[in-house]
Length: 401
Image (cartoon, rainbow, N blue to C red; front, side, top):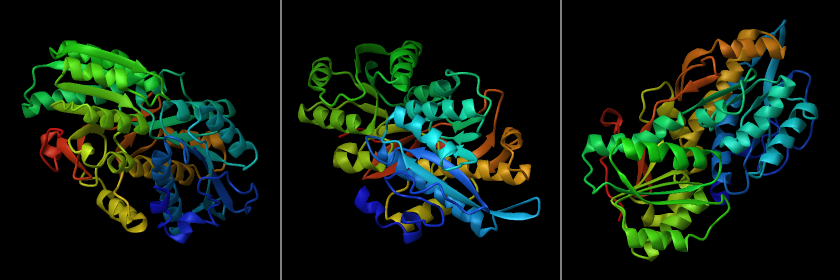
């Protein structure tokens, strides 16, 4: 992944005008008086580095485009936007300290979020306390709402309950034949506990599935011999997994090593980025993961953004370029609408957002969230294919091999 991202344009990598430093802390707090600093703490290293680098590209692209369009004029003065990114190393404590540093030392007027509840919420709490507007994607809405009543933090993403139910709806709608035996494997992180520990068991009962195995594991665990042996012996035809990418890859490989192949394999969270498909190779074929965006969706600029990303990076597109690009544009649009550098006024402008972005319609409700609809994506020959719902499908469902 690191080698691939070296193919980004020099302006993406060095980004002297944007103060962006890949994989490192932002270089300096100094910036021109006519620059509006937008801060972001992202996982550029550690287990979630793949997600962070997609987000970084989405944020930077939105900032670059806004500057090419002339930036913003406030009280007769012209301003450009500058993105400063710090690496949170997939550590919530670092995400929190980065947010503090970006606001106090780097003089960020506003913030953009990290990825996953643990990282986003850690930084969001700092921004909320300091009354600094923060817009994010990559944080499931239930986990976001559960933290507190937010006033200065805004989330554009999917709802865990809808994501969790999508695989059941897909099986019913597409007529996927199984004996309705089910296994659940999930980490003990915030979303793993909610999705794997609570929502999936309730849905299994609702849809008439029998749970024959339920395994919870630490978020840093990489050895799944016992869990996979149990899968082999109980032979469930449907397996649902909620884990980060390294764990998802390890589980998939260990399943193959013992010759266990379910008819349906849904690996939420960890199977989304391209790193999963590359690391798992042909074993990724047939693996499902919930989706909220695809370049084929009829949103303004969706196809163009995908082509731009692939041309600039040489990588397959990820849906995280869309929610990050939209989050940055929501923030930029709010600053332009507020015509002010006052954070409270910018925050009021965010609340009034009602526009279709590259990720779809964005309009925040009273919980400061904007919900994205859910689809089911499946890896096929190293590419993500939308297989459900039928009206959005770009391919047909296949079983894992």
